[in-house]
Image 1 (cartoon, rainbow, N blue to C red):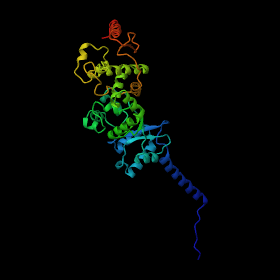
Image 2: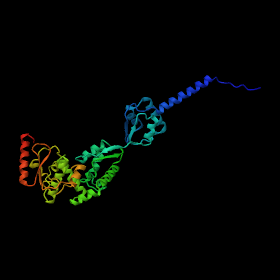
Image 3: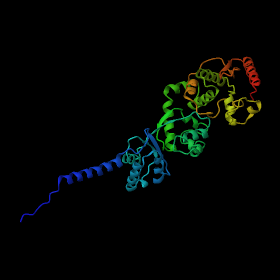
Image 4: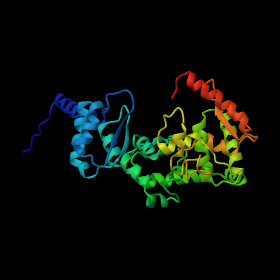
Length: 344
């Protein structure tokens, strides 16, 4: 006897196919629907002490709840909690949960543009760098004032500022301090081209000494043309074995950068940065020297100037003089202007 076979009506087959497609569509939606609910690119920074819960907390403010739940499920089953990579990660509109998971679990981070600032002190530099990097400001500051650490980069605590050339560098947010310093050392070596080194040698200064003088020039003026004139003036004083008598070095010695007037009592501070008492350059820069300041020293404007004084119109420019008599007259006018304005 022939066995009967049961034939399903086509309607059931169509229904099953539709149901299957619905399930596939739903799975695809949860896997590939945009995690971010924002129209702009978002970034998440994952630190060394982050956990699965803290990563979720960082994603939550800009994430769509269904996609975030899918990310959590994938991460939990894939063991992401034991494979968390530090870094700064880009979340673009349209990136699904599985895409974000692969990026984070694979450590596919996005570099940042780090701008090295013209900071006046190493603690200030440390604070500014830490705002852009995973590094802690205290760790950076302590290292930059540690002689053993500085020696690793052929510097001391006075000249370590020379390693930092103010520029913008493409670097990873979670870079280590040693990696950062090695990068700064390479960038500085590249900056000091044969042409710049030849110019430094021609004026009798090392690259460190050029950057030290440039840091003083930077503090004297923001005017690029005047930087070249002031650099030439200070080089004249160095050649004549005269003390620089640079006011910015006194402010640095006292760590009082807001001083408007320098009275005689301030000029007697016992410090290697007191260029009124000590001849020659101070032991290191009084700030991170600007590129314009460095190039102003290397391409100084020749002159007979030995003295300068701020102009009495408070324009930020200087009155230059070749003789002490001319300088005393310029200084008298400036002091009178300070008195008239009640500036102490």
